[in-house]
Length: 113
Length: 108
Image (cartoon, rainbow over all chains, first blue to last red; front, side, top):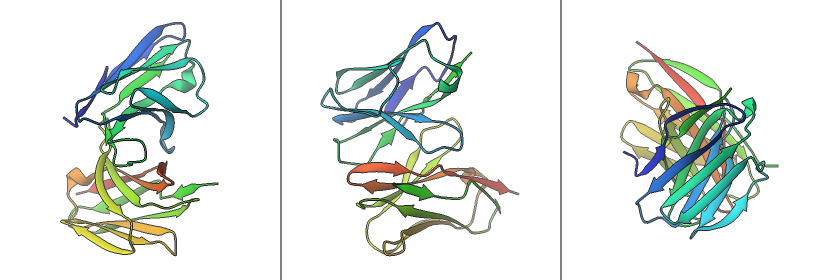
């Protein structure tokens, strides 16, 4: 148990489906992050939330829609994805933005068919 | 641009020593991290260097040279459980810039 929990661990979805990824942390952290991890590529930062407010969107396509209802929960809503979106999606948290001591979740392995 | 380079894959023998290098070019520097990531699991923190020199933590050590933009992770007395990917990341102006990771394969 890393302190950051992601569900589901694995997800297979069609290009017309709508699904959501969930991330939860009870570490008392104020910042939460979504990353995309593709094979043999660096981690790609997608979204950053600080105290529930989105502070960064790294030019992510609108088919990815984040939601942060409170400092402990973060969602990534997915719709009309493409096969190239297949990847490991990692959630992380830190005390606050600017504190780069991250705790990561185990990720959701997403396959788009 | 900002860039971090590390080897894609390395192979070593159980009981031996291996050094994983990381070179970086970033606009800012507030420290360098090493993370370990087993397949299908979360990246977990190994080390953080902000000053030049060697930091030792059990079987693992991490070295930093800021003037050379260079770091390495040294793993001693390798065990099969050390088979994993090792990610190098630089805190550049309080944002993490990541390398693509080095997959370490340990052979008996």
